[in-house]
Structure formats: C-alpha cells, structure tokens
Image (cartoon, rainbow, N blue to C red; front, side):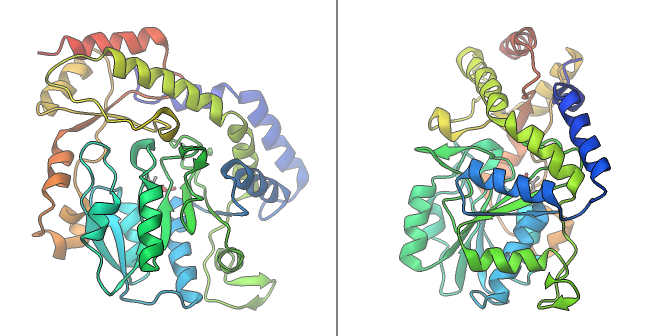
Amino acid sequence: MIPFLDLKAVNGQYANELKEAASRVIDSGWYIMGDELKSFEAEFATYCDADYCIGVANGLDALTLTLRAWKELGRIKEGDEVIVPSNTYIASILSITENKLTPVLVEPDPQTFNITADNIREKLTSKTRVLLPVHLYGQISEMDNIMSLAREHNLLVLEDCAQSHGASIEGKKAGVWGDAGAFSFYPGKNLGALGDAGAIVTNDKELFDVITALRNYGSHEKYRNQFQGVNSRLDEMQAAFLRVKLRHLDSETEKRRVIANSYLNNIKNNKIELPAVKDREQHVWHLFVIKTPDRIALQSYLTELGIQTLIHYPIPPHKQDAYRNWNDMRFPISEELHSCVLSIPMGPMLHEYEVNKIISAINNFA
Ligand SMILES: *Cc1c(COP(=O)(O)O)cnc(C)c1O
C-alpha cells in the first residue's frame, strides 16, 4: 500500500532529534510559555521574515484570534464583511462567524484553486473590511495584486497560510504580504507538530501585543486581565518539536517539488487535468490535486492498485449543515471543483519507485 502521507516515517527521520527535544522539555520542569516557545517564535518569524510571531494552540485559533484582535483594536466590528474563498477548508470560515463577522464567499480561479484580485473586486461592498485569502494546497495566492486592491480600498488582509509554509512570490513568503498570516502546525501540514499547534506572523506591534494577551486569558501580566481572552497557548513540548521540524522544512519542500515535477512532467491521460503552477517558488505542494470527471472510478481503481487518495474537500462550505442558510446559494465553480478534485500521494517520504508506480497507474486509467 502506498499511503497518502506516511506521518510515522516523516517524524521517524528525526526520531533522535525529537526525543532529545522532548527530554530537554521534560528536564526543564517548565511546560507552558517558556524558552522553547520564545525560541520557536523567534525562529519562525525569521523563517517568514516577519517582525513578530505568536504561537497559539492551533490554526483555527490563529485565524480567529487575529480577527478578534482587530475587533479589540477597533479596526473592525461585528457585522463587517470578510472576503473568503468559497472552496476553502471550513476553518477559514469558522474564524469569521465565530467573531460575528459576515463571510462573503468568492469563487476561486479553477486553474489555481485560489481567489484573485479580479474575483474579489466584484464582491466588495461598503461593508467589506477584511480580505482572507487562503493559499490552498500550497500555492500562494496572487498577493501582489491582492495587496494593491486592499491598499486601494483600505482593507485589512489576513492570509490563511495553513497549507503554505514557505511558499513565496519573488522571495517574499506567505504570511508577510498581508497584515497578518495565520499558520497551522497540525501534524499533517508541511510544518507539522506531534499534536496541535498554530501561529500568527505579523509586522504590526499593536496586533502582536493584543494577540499575545488574547491567547493567554487576555492577560499580559499574571492576574491582570485586559481582555476577555481565551486559553490558546502553544505548549513547550510542541514548540520544541517544531524547532526540530522547522530546520528540515526547506529540504522537505524540495522533496515535494521533485515529486510534483515528476507528476507534472509524466502524468499523461486525457481524463486527468493537472494543477496549474505559476512558478517553482510559489508552490510548496502541501497537496497534489488533480481533476477528473471520473473521480469515483479513478479513486477505486487506485485503491485496488494499493494507492491511497483523499478528497480535499468533498463538500463545499456553503453546502454544510453548519451553514444551513447558505445551502441554496450557488457557487458553480466551487461545486464543480468539489465534485472532481482528487489528491494523490504527496510527502517528503514518498520514494521514486512509488511515484513512478502512481504515474503509470494513472496513465493506464481508462
Ligand atoms: C488545517 C487548516 C486550518 C486549521 O488548522 P488547525 O490547526 O487544524 O486548526 C485552517 N485553514 C486551512 C486552509 C487549513 O488547511
């Protein structure tokens, strides 16, 4: 069986370093908000070329707390509209509704799966205050154009970077184009912890200060609470693991790129559409997503051959029970994408012979 992503093997590469990191934390006697977190925040800020990084409990909280902080700072208020892709993972949208802001769904470019400045422009209203582009599957959105639009209309920009650690345009990484970037370190992400974790990067000192308080009960100083905060801290154990994994992120991304190039150059089947890539640096290949009108047949054919595939995502947000009042809305591009996308194995531990087996299996699919 070729697994979709062999996480045990991914972390197994660094077993010694990870165990050493765990021992260091155990022996330190300090498990929350200590030196490991401070060091990881500094190292991840440097990696992204951001002034500040704030570790939080998960990627959803990274998004939610950033929007919450902008409310606390008086930059946005309940009912304001937030532009978000209609084909994103549900978390992007949950962060908006959790803050009692109004999501405005924008259809993506079906080729790149990301929203564009032109698509966003059509949905701007007098209530639009935030753009929340999602760099889906590892490819950064056209942030140069999106930022020009945002500046023109005085909008805040929160990048959902949960799938795009290290993706960049002309060397400028995901997370530092907008006013803030939210990351997830869920184990299956390109930079994955051994549990839940997330972070926000920003160059905005005020935002940094407010989120730092919000994640810790709204407090900067023990027993003094400035905000009605939450408990969303990135613990020392996960921070120590992430410091190990961060050192290997770029070499893992390089392995993903080799696999993606192999798929792009060699998959040839007129029933399969390959993903569109703008250029090498822009994509970090969190997922390799193909499109086919025969998804059910292709998926079961590949399963029979021992190749595991997944669907990201089978149901669009507007068709979810959680957003029942959107169920009658129509987003034809998203609906079409949700019916034809299939993610084939992708990860740093995939061997060349496995990649070749996947390619010939797909090429022989009739
Ligand atoms: C994974 C993911 C999130 C949420 O991250 P968690 O750490 O699981 O909370 C948010 N947005 C996108 C696009 C994701 O893929």
